[in-house]
Length: 427
Image (cartoon, rainbow, N blue to C red; front, side):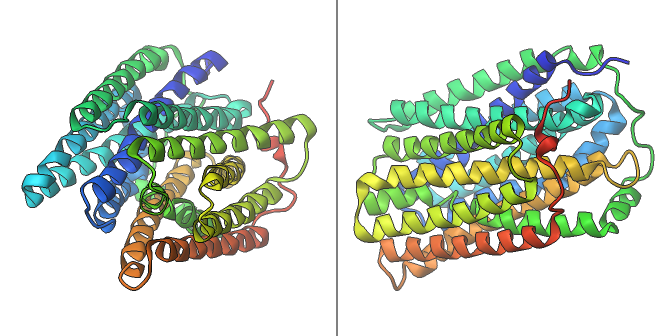
């Protein structure tokens, strides 16, 4: 039976790259514009981004529907179209806020709901296709490749957009978002078209009822403990997502282009961190997945402490290096956690890989929404009685503490014997 070739895996990675390119505009650039240029409370974009993550709690059901339907390509492309439409509507809502707040809010709610539906439908169907049509020995490598390409799309879009967005105008923003959305939809269509017809799934699709499969996975103690770890670590991972660019704007007087470029630098660090773990683990076979996860969490905590210190001391020139360091350790944590997921997904009864990955994907989505909203809400709360630098610093320190807790949990529940071979491409 045919399975995905390396070239086909790379093509599907282009879909992940397109997803990241659109999403970074809505979670970083538009968020900063709402808080700094429009003067809105940080909790508002935080709530909108939380909405798009909250809707993604349906990821397991998207994967199940994709399994049953037998035409994942339609869901992949259709989801990308919905995501693009949501991003355009979110951008169009910005000038409406300045004239009629409630109309702008209504448009934004619809926009971010579309974004969540699009990411859930397209992203989950893509992962389902990879899971069912990738040879077992290539699954971990396929997950790592597609994740790296998504981070590359995020970093590239943030960097290029940041360079093009100065001097800022709403018309320029519309043109940039339009180009990114159109390009992402076209690239997704070309990349995904025809692959599914040429590939025969390695195994027959799941036929048991969805809730039965989900309950069986949840009854597995290791899967349940790992779900808790995913939630806790991802809350820490996403707490800074909505406040880092406003922090740069309010504390360091960064322009919209400069703060967007800062996000690009951070995601560039994530990309390098992922490559570092991949090369070191596969080439030199140093460390276990457990040790890389713990190191990534502790390093992220240290970088957040550094970002806080840079603001307190007013060391503007050190902000970018500190943010890159945060991205580096985030990348180390993320890719080793992905490897752990792939290694654990195949445990237990067969035909449950998709359900397990869906469960962890839902935990990640809920944690991302909660973490982003909590970070923004805490900043608003602290700013009532603190200076900007103190308010943001307090949230960064709290986030660092959560990363430390996640590291301790990983050290306790993860198998220290789990090798880094989970990241090694099969021959």
